[in-house]
Length: 372
Image (cartoon, rainbow, N blue to C red; front, top):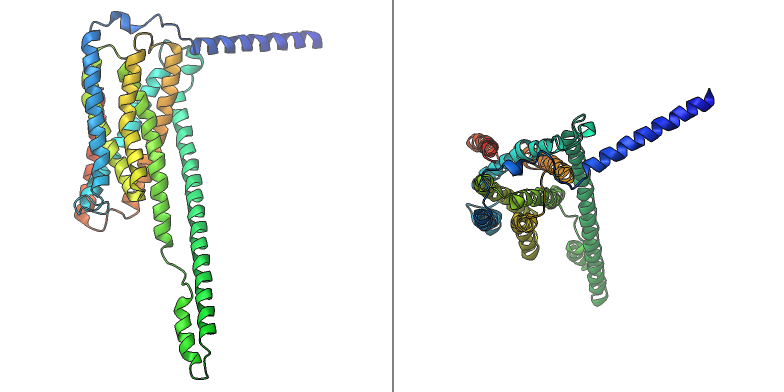
C-alpha cells in the first residue's frame, strides 16, 4: 500500500507541476491572442495615428511642464506661495485627480488586463490579483515612507549634532582665548563671566519644523516614483495604439491628468526646499516620462501585441502597483496630511473651498473614464 500511495503522490505532484508549467507558459506567451480585437478594428489609420501621437507628445509635454513649474516658479510670489490659499485649493484639486487616477483608471485597467480572456482562467480569473497587488504596493509604500523618513531624520540629526559640536568647540576656544588675554581681578571676574555666557551654544528649537521638512522630502520622492511608474505605462499604451478613435480622447484626458499631477508634484518639491538643480531635475524627469513612453510605444507598435498574454500580465501587474502607490500617496500624504493635519488653516471658507476642490478633482478625473 505504501508503494502505491507513494506512486500516486508522485503522479499528483508531477501532474500539478505540469499544470503549473503550462499555466505559466500560457500566461507569459508573446504569441497573439486568438480573440485579438485589432483584426476587427474599423478605426485604424497608421498615417493619422502618427500625427496624433506627435500632437500627444507635444501637448502632454507642455501641460506637464506648465503644471509642475507653477508651484516652483511661485515660491516667492504671494498668490502661488505654498502657504497661500491659491496653492492650497489647487493642491486639493490635484489630490482628487491623483486619487481618481488610482481608483478609477489604474485599478480598473489592471483588473481588465488580468482578467482578459486571453489569459488562462486559472489562476487569473480565480483570484483578484489586481486588488491584491495594489494592496501589497500600498503596504510597501507605507514601509518605504517610514524607512525613508527615519533615514532622513537620523541624517539631519547627525548633521545638526555635528554643527552643535563645532559651535561648542569654537565657543570654548574663544572663551579660553579671552581668559588668557585678560587676567581678571576680583571685580572684573563677574564682567568676564557675563561676556562668556553668550558664547555657550544654545539648543536650537524647531524639531517640528525639521520633521515637517523631512516629510516633505520623503513625500516628494515617493510621489514622483508613483507618478513616473504609471506615466510610463499610460505613455506606452497610447504609443502602441493604432486607432485614431482611441488616441483622440486620450490626448485631452492625459493632458488634463498630467497638468494636475504635475502641480501636486511641483508643490511637494517646492515644500521640500530642494536646491534649484535638484528641483529642476525632478520636474524635468516627470515632464518627459509620458512623452518618452509614447515615443517608445510608437517605435514598437509594429511588432508589439497588446493582447498577448505576456503583455497583459506585465501591464496588469504594473498598473496594480501604480494604483496602490497613488492611492496611498493621495489618501495619506496629500489628503490626510493637509485636511486632518490642520494645513488648510482655520478659515471656514477655505476649508469648504478645499473640500469642494478635492471632490471636483476626483469627479472630473473619474468622468474622463467615459472616454479614456
